[in-house]
Every structure is written in C-alpha cells, then in structure tokens.
Image 1 (tube, rainbow, N blue to C red):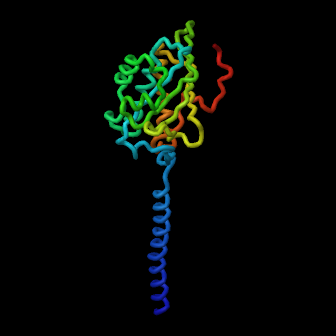
Image 2 (image 1 turned 135 degrees about the vertical axis):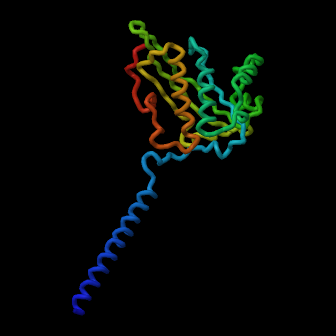
Image 3 (image 1 turned 120 degrees about the vertical axis):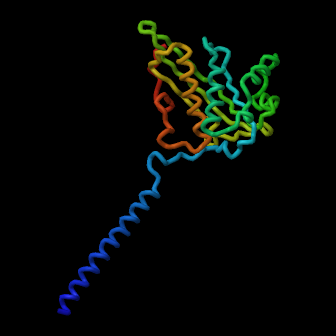
Length: 232
C-alpha cells in the first residue's frame, strides 16, 4: 500500500515539476527572443547625430555648377527635400533650419555670392552649421516615344561648422558621395526632378539619425552601381 502511495506521489511530483521546468525554460527562450531586436527593429547608428544638436541652426546650401543646366530648379527641389527630411527624420524644428527664400534673397542681393565660401554664407545667415551639397552630375533624359523620363543625380555632401570651418561629417572621407537614379518615371519632367531630389535627400539625411536597417537602402540609390553604360 505504501509503495503504491509512493509511486502516486512520485507521479504527481513529476507531473508538476516537469511542466514547471518546461515552462520556465520556454519562458526564458521567449524572453530571450523578445529581447533580441528583429530585422525591423535593428538600427544603423547615426554617423553624426544632429538630434543631439537640435538647437544649432543649420543652413542647407546646394552648389550647382554654371555648366550644369537644368530646365527645372534642381537647386530648389534638392534644398527643400533635404530640409523636409531633416524635419521629418531628425525631428529638427523649422526655426533651426534656414528657409530657402531667405537664402535666395541673400544670394540675389550679393554680386559676389559665387566668391563666398559655404561657411561665409552660413555666417551671414546666422547659422551654426552648413550642410554643403555639391552637384557633380545631373542627367534627365526624356524617352519621347513613350513619354517617360530616366534620371541620374550625383552629389557630394559635407557638414561644416560655421565658426571654425571645421568638417564635422563625414569623418572617414573628404565628403560623402551619393548617387541616385531611375530608368522610368511617367509623371513628367517635374515629377522626375522631384523624385531625384527626394531620393538624394533621403540618402544624405539617413546618416544623421539612427536609421532602421531595413529602411537604410532605397530602390533609387545608385551609389554601389556602375553607370558607365548610361546612354546620353
């Protein structure tokens, strides 16, 4: 009789202990999984965190060489796209970004504007930093047979401190190269330019905040691709 009771006791103990141990182990596994960032949660750290300097005024200055002719105002679209991304992605307040019309008025009022350095322009507009963007290449071709556009934009970007002229970003090179492009845009010339500007702006601003890993690369980016086969 006692033997039977002992066997029943052992069986009950096993029935309780085993599920408890299994639950504990499974729970640890669940906690471990929950504590591990998924692909959607992983972030690429900012190369230069502008959010930490949110109260320093920034000028976005786009330099477009005289030989580079654009039927639409590429400089305007690119400047505005970068400003919008800085507000949306980095959460910078509009008051800490020099407005394009303020820059345009200053440019129009200075006969020697082309002789001024980026930091001189920035100082004149009371900005603490200047994000200087140089357009290296811009191509927009219309395929008249079916009425769509193909485009390409290549820029160099650098962030400078106004007071000292010191380069703040990037650390690893003289400037950051950004190339974007597409083979098909059916919305017309202006839509094509806006698309180039938006893609370029996104690729520039992503280095100034902790960007989600799955959103770091975009479809129109061409930085890692060869465009030697471009048909002019």
